[in-house]
Length: 318
Image (tube, rainbow, N blue to C red; front, side):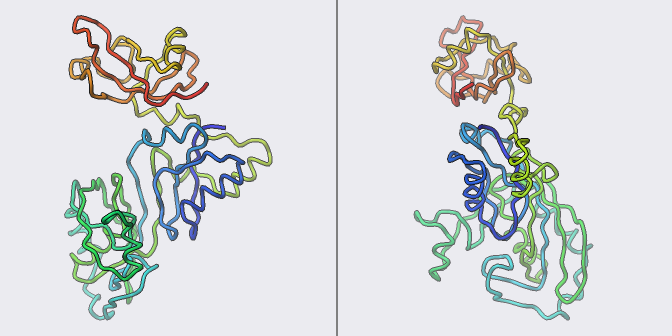
């Protein structure tokens, strides 16, 4: 078995727990996930099965979330799983409106510097930040640049501790808990993440994700099929190899190819390729559309050659 699963992760399980349960369900040892979700979060968890685990790094990077932010509350973990360290009076929050929040959202768009939560998986001197935090060690976590493409208010609920449902489109490495925390700081109300659902990850959508129960039912009826690997490579330029080149590909040989044979790629970019450095990633298949893996383009060492070089990076069995 090989391919991908878009798992609808339930609340209360770690991503590692989900992989373990799938290993038992599918009776497969070689399974990995692409993009950790906190135990309290739900939604899309991309999972690779078999040789597809070598393809995880080539999945599309964008992610989308539905986040519920609660104002007037600050916690140690920047979500409701942590200890409450500050709680504002309901009277001090009466001025807060969706319009005032909307005015602040543009500050969080584009490339911004974000400090991950104290309870996060980032490494500090070789240790995970959450391990240090559990030992009551306060450490300075350096900021990192992240990309936030869209913040859109979905719903506003007034009350003693008002809540906001926010749609977030962002790049990898973005902490939604940090967005909640920083938005609360900007508004001088304090805030924490009350709930989180990932609606898109690595090209997979929540609407097409499967629960554990659905997977078990499909397995029992003999209808379960993971997503084919090639279907997840549509965002990459692609090339189909003739039979003689397929044999050389499986031997790990570098192949001379014509730039015009690469689909969804500007052949003029061949002039920018380097002999030593890896160029763009290319999805590789045979003439029958069987996925053969992923290669990278390089310039030909012969400056007079009309071909460029396709170097195998991930070679998959047929």
